[in-house]
Image (cartoon, rainbow, N blue to C red; front, side, top):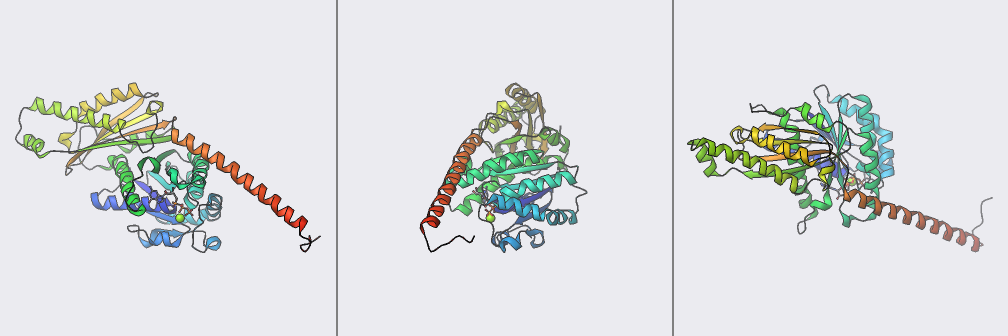
Length: 383
Ligand SMILES: Nc1nc2c(ncn2[C@@H]2O[C@H](COP(=O)(O)OP(=O)(O)OP(=O)(O)O)[C@@H](O)[C@H]2O)c(=O)[nH]1
Ligand SMILES: [Mg+2]
């Protein structure tokens, strides 16, 4: 599937950049173009792989290129003012080969959190192709303003896009390293999953039942929120040796089937991009990626049956992503339209509390200010 990636704000720009890094490393060609949009010039300068020309500074008249400090209403304002500029930057780069757009943003900040939904609405008006969102949720220790921003942005974003992938920094945060290094690792985890999901339809190899872009899009059709599971295993040299010198064929097939079913099991039971109760999913898609000989139709069929029993909906698709040179077998399981997500409830609770406090503080301040004016004779009202 050919995707036009737009990274909005700092997290968005970095993840979009990681998409290009992945493409460079693996030779995959599913990213048609990656743009970074930001109100902060320094953030745009810090990006590595996105060409200078594809980094777009917005809101300069308001922020002078210094960002907007987690004010997501201002982020939405900037996007509304400049949506035509952004749209023409996208248009200029050619969209005729695009299968889908992906707008990536950190939902806890200001620029991306406020801007991404505004841009999504515009792109949906303009193009027939689906517009997907990838929203990154803040971790708990980033404070209540980030939670409030995320809770608000989430509700808008999910309504503007054809499907919203969520990734929870809190579930993935790592201790010890510097924040920057930690983000690099996390971003790699994010794009690895999308590399299989979106790359699958672009495979040039022949496989048993290769997943195509339509299957990914049909799984995402219907909207709502999606989560992705992933598991991977290196092919041992012993396994390769056996394969090369053809020992007991039936035995090998059994190995291959079991490997796929157990990798799917691990992908579902392991850490999802956003932890949730997957039994609430409307649809699912299973992809097994690796050397064609290691992929197994039977393994996929068995796993499909298992997941069909597991989820609320009935639609479960599955197939291969043959990678001739790979040394790993990996599985991705996409659950679309999931509804029971504890982290969202938590963000909404913290957000609502924060909103109350902000209201209280501002009415308290107003009162204090009034009192000050009343008692201070030297400050006279103008009229
Ligand atoms: N996964 C991931 N999250 C990030 C990264 N950079 C920032 N974040 C998260 O994104 C949120 C902040 O959003 P940013 O993208 O920095 O904010 P912004 O859109 O640039 O908005 P302002 O700077 O407030 O104008 C926080 O929750 C961070 O934890 C990154 O590279 N990867
Ligand atoms: Mg920023």
